Image (cartoon, rainbow, N blue to C red; front, side):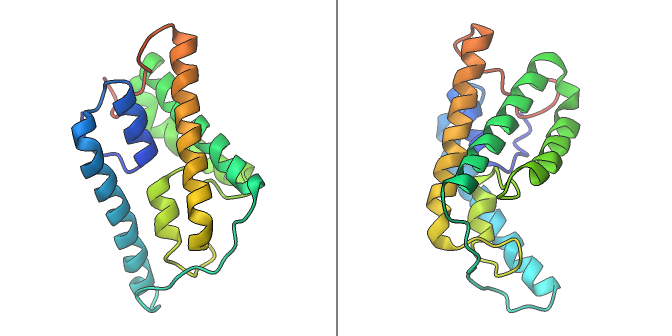
Length: 168
């Protein structure tokens, strides 16, 4: 496993299937969240903004949260299906899915708890109020869990077919 994944929802889905060690989950998710925050700070500095800010953009309600559930469900499903049928296509399929989910979700498809947290520390157009983060993250984790469950159920396996790199 390469370990070059940036999404805690993917990390948790892989760990639930035995593809990733539960012992490493806290380290990876911590690094993913810290990396997202560092990326927000770097983007602010690159664009001449103050290095930090707290978002005031509202993302309230169940509709955007539901869209995060759907977006994350789809992301995990795409990874699982590619892992099963065409592992080398994972990078392109994930990029294509995230790009399309940007357009079909009212939340612009964060589909990543680390990105959601990072976007709460940016007042740019991509920001989300810290108060809205818990609902978005809960929806993302529920979407990942549901995709993992459906993947197990439809494949007849105990573990989902989620791989973290091509060729596994």
